Length: 403
Image 1 (tube, one colour):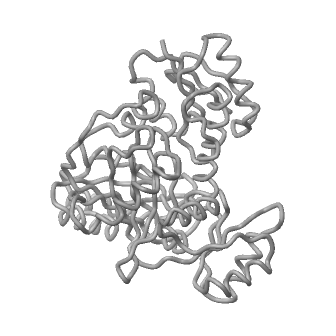
Image 2 (tube, one colour):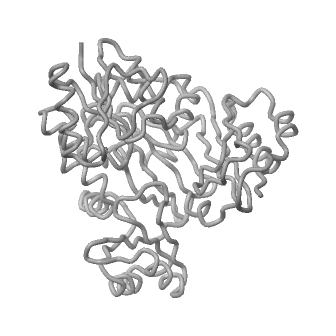
């Protein structure tokens, strides 16, 4: 029986629980948890330990040691969240397990280090500077030029990210982000063009599968305009020469950055002049239901695909990309709580038969601050055009109302 430790601060979160069930589906494993909050209900863990701070590597090792004394040595220590990857590597190194390359984890986690590493490897990335004071910010703006973006060194999902287009924006962004010797901020070239993601499955650093998604519009614009209902589309055919350059660059990047076995999530741009540039890359599965989207496109359980790679060093492909898939993240203008959702019946009538999954906004729930909104609808069809038309109908017809 292989002892697999799953590290997650809050195991009840939907995505965390779904990846946990994927681990549970593997053969010959004892699933052990290291959590900050005890799981509820029929959680499926054979045992778990609760620590005060699941982001503290010392506490994680102490909790893991309790489990090791109960069940013996570990096979793997895994997790899916961006902010636990370095700590996972520290625990794996402590026990001499695969995944213990702390330096690689830090390269992926720290945005400045990541870009320095990618640039040194010849990978096209956005120009950037590390800020430790407001003066650093003004000097970076002079050197990089406007527009630019201010972001934390270890952020995810556009949190605490500021778009700077004017000197006034820069002043406000620096006042909000407050760079200092103890709080580093990244100033980064604002990449303009079409924005995509590139997700890979890797076995011991070798990419064995990839998926490409297109954003309409980019997450930063969605964050800046809270009325926009974000759309992501996975085109059915990604095999053509239009994506040859990003395939080459992305595969090269994850290999050279030190990825082991698991899933990576990369965000990249096709600039207006046709060239590509990497925004960032993370050594974890994508969020925002992307794992479901990849699964629907290929008729597979992509959550289990991650588990097989991370725990078994295995991949069950190749997988044919059978469908185009699209997701609409539901939200609207205004503040307060969800009071109603308009247009559902009409949208359902017009896209009937294309919807494969939906989570509707909960009446009475507070408005989400995330670009993922208060719910979503996923559609699929063999034709890209049909999927694009369906997402257009949904975002133009369905409106979340707040009050």
